Image 1: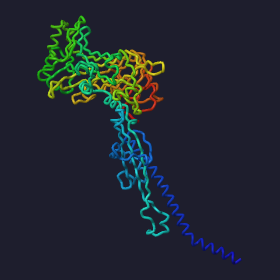
Image 2: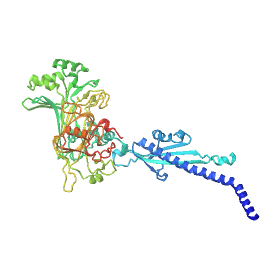
Image 3: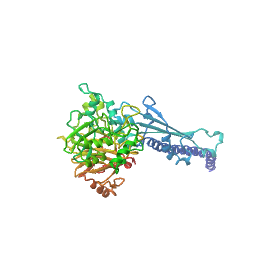
Image 4: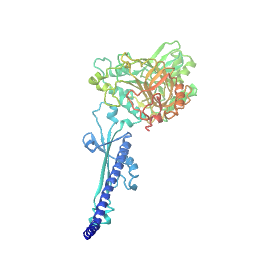
Amino acid sequence: MREKQAEKGTVIVFIALMLPFLILFAGMAIDIGRGYLHKSDMQNAADAASLAGVEKVSSSQARLIAVSDVPTLGQFIQSESSRIADAGADKFLTLDNKGTWQTGGSNVKTELRKKVDPSQNNPIRKRWSATYYYKVELTDNMDFQFARMFLPEALIPADWKVNVESWAESSNLSGIDLLTQGLMVEEAETFSTYQELEKGIRKPSNVTTDKSRYVKDISFTNAGPTYNATDGTRSEVFNMDGTNELNNNMKNLFINFKPDFSHSQKLTDNWDLDAILGMSVTQARQYLYNLVNKGVQLTNWRIIDEQGNLRVEHEGGPPSLWGAFYDNLKKVYGISESMAEQLMFARIASIINIVQPYEVRDVESLAQTSPKDISYSVYDDTPNKYDPLFVRIESEEYNESNGKAEGPYVTNTVRDISINIKADNTEKDMYGDYKYRPMLFFYDGPVGENNERGVGRKSRTVNFTLEEDFRGILFAPNSPVHVEGNGHKFYGIIVAEKIVDAAGNIIPMPDQQNKDTDAELQSFYSQLGFEDATYDDFEAVQLTVYKNPKKDVVYLTPRAGNTT
């Protein structure tokens, strides 16, 4: 009996001796567990911060990647300032650890790398796209709360730190808004002026005309505005015929407005023709003569008399004072005084007629023989199977130097622009593939005094009229656009400053498409007169406002600049 009692006493003594060690080890286990839990929390914070940071700098969705997948710095992998990415990361970091984590602090390290690939064929990706890699590294001291209850401070590890690292990757193209991408496509795929076109085009060896004439032939260039005394209008007509062998196989086309005013000094205050509206002929004559030194003169014209006969075609050469030209209309060409006055105050109507569609080219073969003569899908770097035809409508020149640095200068007054779809490019072949190319029109509006667009001289309404079904894009972000669907189908996108009716009144539309706005959108599109309107980007732009726009094809400029 005593032996059993002695054994019990021994166990009690042993437990008493071991208890402090058991508590110590249990406490250390708790400390270590807390450390792993703290590290897990830190990793979550770093992951969220790296994703937020790289999305901030790329404006696109991101994904976490392993450290082994991060490319090393080199020729195409560049180190970038992480300031913008850090701002995105801080929104998450300051929510954790009671605000003690913040980029720039000693316990937070960040790094941003940018990958560019100049070997890409896609000019949009080559010029604008990049892949970003962003790192967030967090370091924090491990606090041994339980161990401190049993061990002297000298035995507590002073530098046991918890360290986590997170990398995230994002490519910025998919996050670029529709407006910005439209501008990118316009810049990359088209020429902005006749001078730029002439400089960038190489004349084929079998062409016998000089280069200037060749460029005028492959673009759409008239001798000048037509003064048509049969109806009192001034106009330039451009008929786009897809069977024209000279330009039907080109990647892009340019519509060139001939200037109608010449002057020795630069015009100021965004001057335009509306300054003389309401004046008498005598007042306008004197005003234009006094506007600059030696007067403002007319240049480039065709005159059709009241019997419908072409009387003169004048391109370049000595211009004429406005008043002298008015006198000649009456005296030389026999045009009545009332008609001559109407012509002198008439705005120029630039009329673009699509009279025959352009056949789809063999882009796979062209990619091998002439890779610069095709476009590439914005979704990848492959030849764009849709083979869109890019059509740049000139922005009306303002104070363009005509041969010499200090003038004389030429100016295009602001045009009335009409695009008339007279040919159906929606037909498919027996295999279900489209036979014709979608047409992408780009128009910035007139150039202002400070060489800006959409700010100084304002665009007049662009009239977009469907006489047949049509596939294409009208990108006119600085212009009011009047659409007449006339019961036809439209596949594509319209980007406009605003949509107006025939009287110029704004037609309101909702900011987005959802179940609550369907009825309002239906009312909006019914006013445009489409039988059907279906969104299609022809792999030239990517819509990031929402993924499935379906019947929603019109984007006002503020909305086209939306990425959320």
